[in-house]
Amino acid sequence: MNRKEQPIIVGLDIGTTKVVAIAGRKNEFGKLEILGFGKADSAGVSHGVVLNIEQCIRSIEQAIDKCIQSNPNLEINEVYVGIAGQHIKSLQTRGDRVRSMTDDEITKEDIDMLIKDQYKTYIPAGDQIIDIIPQDFMIDNTPNILDPIGMSGIKVGANFHIVTGDRNAIRNIKRCVDKSGLKTNDLVLQPLASAAAVMNNEDLEAGVAIVDIGGGTTDMAVFYDGILQHTAVIPYAGTNITNDIRQGLGVLRAQAEAMKVQFGMALADEAKTNAYITIPGLRGLPPKEISVKNLAHIIQARTEEILDYVMYHLKQVNLDKRLFGGIILTGGGSQLNHLIQLTEYKTGLGARIGQPNEHLAGGHHEALNHPMYATCIGLILRGYSDFETGKLNFNSSNKEISVMKEAPSKDIFIKMELPKEGRHVEEPAAVAYETPEQRAEKQERNNKRSETIKKVFNQIKNGFMSFFEEPEDQKME
Image (cartoon, rainbow, N blue to C red; front, side, top):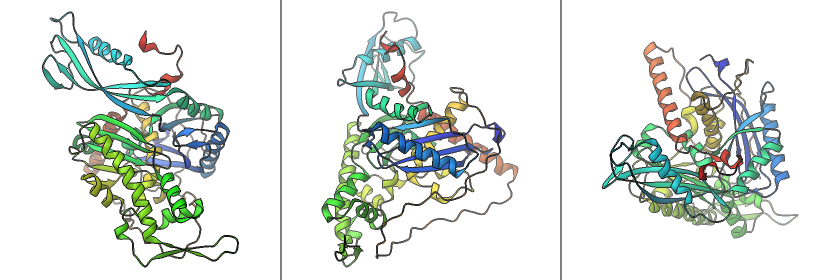
């Protein structure tokens, strides 16, 4: 398809510490060209929950304005919005149904009735079932059946993964987007968006846990045998680490954040005993020296607590020793030095950093290929999944909009005197002439990427937009 016929899709990630808007369009090779980028400090949001509507609206408007400023030809009217928050929960249930017409084949209607029964599952007041995902079926005494339709049996049962959320908390997110003058195409579970951005088919087959360490929450999505087995939102993340540093070392919040980003590491044993950070004194007071080792001890303690929660959730679904693909760490918090080693030590599973580079076209600025933006890139991929399956129609732009090549504005931190160790960044390979065979291979990789994205997003079928439908709940009728 011609590039101009492809729609421009915007992802909006509303987090506890930042609001990010990224506009992207697929090129002829199925990779995303970044057309616009905007980031603003988040206000009015805590642990993924909106606490102040007006402040949240201002943050969204600032991010969208900066995105348009980065590429003035852009028009942004509709967005895909990521949603998490500590109110998102999941549980595992078991359901069975005895069939009356035992001689007939099992039909889709039989499975639909079995799923509908699960809407009677008890959940806390104020919560609502977002989706019910069958994981494996049992017919009579035969377990581990993935697709029972067309088979025969008296009793059909299944194990289910149920995702729930607070109706009002979800409505408040959409209300903020609406009042910013934007249309919400869909609300997407953030762990799934991050998973789509950093996973491939091999990861789905081997079994992986996506652990997205954000500002206010750590989001988890666990896949095994190609099926979403578990989702979780852990209410501890980067903000908690910053608060621990602030209280433990007696510094300002901005200083704590700067120390975490510039000198923080997740393994205290790797910190030098004689290394100190000098920070400016307050209002004429002398400069203060902070031990790098003490800083690392504080960070490690909170990071280990987050990893303990990760293992708790993996044990709940009996996958703590069966994920051959290990743990994929993403989100801004995944950039802590030595986090991979600590994760492998605490979990006994392999670990790596997940970046959205596989989906990004060449020519974009390296700063966008960062785990911090995995959720936002995943939201754009969700939009293209909807577009390619015909779920939603988009107006393609006939304008010639150039790819954004300038770096996003960097955060300015307090100047500190200890030099930061540089991270190795691989240089992009030189572009050579493509043979027809190489072009065909690229197309095959593109098809595989699209297939992976569809598999991830097809796990949750009902989605969050059902929270805004009237009448209240069609499924219980």
